[in-house]
Length: 275
Image 1 (cartoon, rainbow, N blue to C red):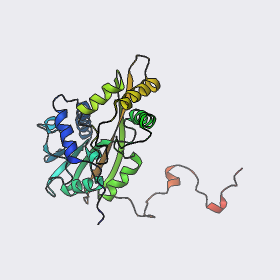
Image 2 (tube, helix red, strand yellow):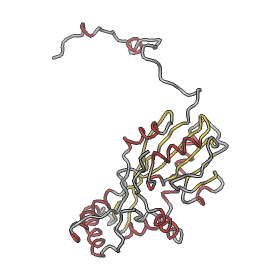
Image 3 (tube, rainbow, N blue to C red):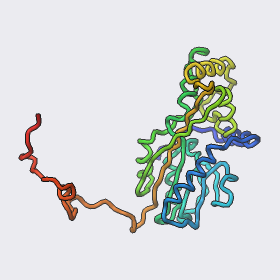
Image 4 (cartoon, rainbow, N blue to C red):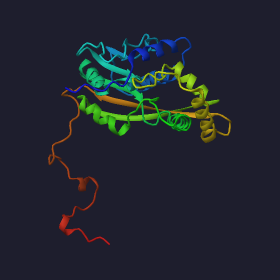
């Protein structure tokens, strides 16, 4: 079995999160908690054994049991009817492994909701930092996580064994007075650079100053503030159960499509020529 590459420096991530709790900015975590409640309200089901994978358990107090988002999740097999992975899977060294662990923890017909940052997240900052570092130092260093695209994530749910997989997203745009204020907020979210391959020495101040200038030049709004985009992807899947809908076998339809559309069905050879 191939060992997944080490993406995240877990001790550094833990330090970043502990530092963030001194003056936290957890509004995106709050957004995910509210989104979870909205989505569950649309499901005709009462969940009696929920669990949430989160680095910030205080946000889920009174709603569910919580577990830390470690590489190995402390989830008991076949024990929960709802598993929520709350905006931390982007730090996983093995996202498919996280999904598999959540799938095994669910009882039959249990629901999984997973939230993670998508590929459009911080695209403004990423571009400005890359250009600034290239100009100032002549090179690039790992600074921001590689983030998944929504078109790839539905397939990951299927690989993990979920039925009825769905991947959708929503975007949250937050404005700041400048790029340095955005970077301070990222640290207050616990989302500072914890990449295993990051630079192990302080970045030159000139890089951040140039990135802030580029951000202001290219993205300042009429009110003088800059936007920061956060794309949040939601993954939905169900643990298999015999009661769930299944696709029909080819040729087993009881009614022709042409009848449903109230149109004539022509054999391929009888179709009129194009043009």
